[in-house]
Amino acid sequence: MQLEIFRYRPDRESEPTFQTYEVPFREDWVVLDAINYIKEQIDGTLSYRWSCRMGVCGSCGMMVNGVPKLTCAVFLRDYHEGKIRVEPLSGFPVERDLVSVIDDFINKLKDIKAWIMREEGQEQPVEEGEYLQTPAELARYKQYSMCINCMLCYAACPVYAQDSTFIGPAAIALGQRYNMDSRDQGRDQRQEIIASHEGIWECTFVGECTTVCPQDVDPAAAIQRAKVSSTIDWFREVLVPWGKRK
Amino acid sequence: MSPYHRPVPKTWWLKRRAYFLFMIRELTSVFAAAYCAFLLVFIYKLGEGAQAYASMIDLMQSPSSIVLHCVTLTFVLYHTITWFNLTPKIMVLRVGEERVPPLVIAGTIYAGWIVLSLAIAWIVLGS
Image 1 (cartoon, helix red, strand yellow):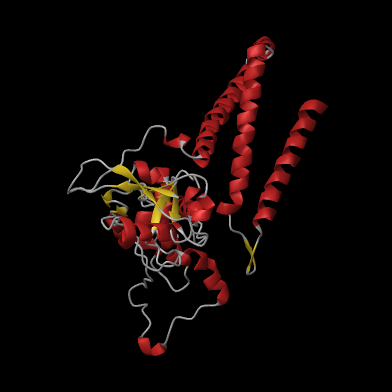
Image 2 (spheres, one colour; image 1 turned 90 degrees about the horizontal axis):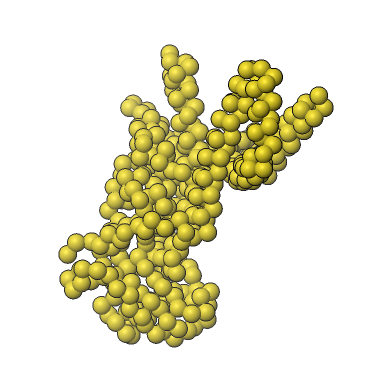
């Protein structure tokens, strides 16, 4: 079976090329197994990221025949006819071969403040124990908390591909995850980014982020719901200017 | 040793079926908006008197106008159905602790659409 791999070695070439490798076909091999075989048996210069091999770490995301996939979760047998073309995730600059530059996403995660925030003076002392939550309160955000930061949603998003200032699907979904958490009080701070021009309003609801998500996070829905709540905020501010935004 | 930035081709929306269908959905908005503008003109003509209204009806009966109406109807139906289907994704309603199933939300909207359409048809055709 043939694997056509995107190669970019900035020390040797200014433009990327494709290199074809012949790998044995095995029924139980995933695409990552084939890439590991190339690295170990054919060409040790090939660079790529991977870690857990079980769809948890989110580091082996690549374009497989033009579609963003976790390479540890797609089998060779699903592409038995013809070649498999493997490229780095679209939308991101390429560091080397299949390794993308992901600094932009990491910075956006920081900007969106994807952690529990309490208002000043509201922090519960450690000796009082944990913040309690009912199963119903957990159910409100649990889906969004399943994100593994694999960035497949960014690679599927045509808006991000054309304008990388867009905060993007996973970061907004994670912002929503904390906004909907009953223990969190940081929504107002996150809104500055979520409701900005580069936030939810940049999204045109193509929906592919949700289609490619390996964890069923449904970032497209998270963004549209954030649009609804931001619109309600706006109406509240205009119609009830003396009222406090919740 | 700088990172390589891959260019995005202008034909990116032809690369995947979902992108293409999305672009069609965006295009249908133009037809929906244009038909709203047309309806406003129609009402305006109605206010100008019987002669202006009759000439408007004449214009609408021309073959090119009928073709344009059929094309617009197709696009507006596509627009409506795709957005109706997306609505349960956006609207999360809860009754007590239970989430209202997406099918119920979509079904309610479709039912409302049918009832309203029948009511308008009854008013227009019945009078």
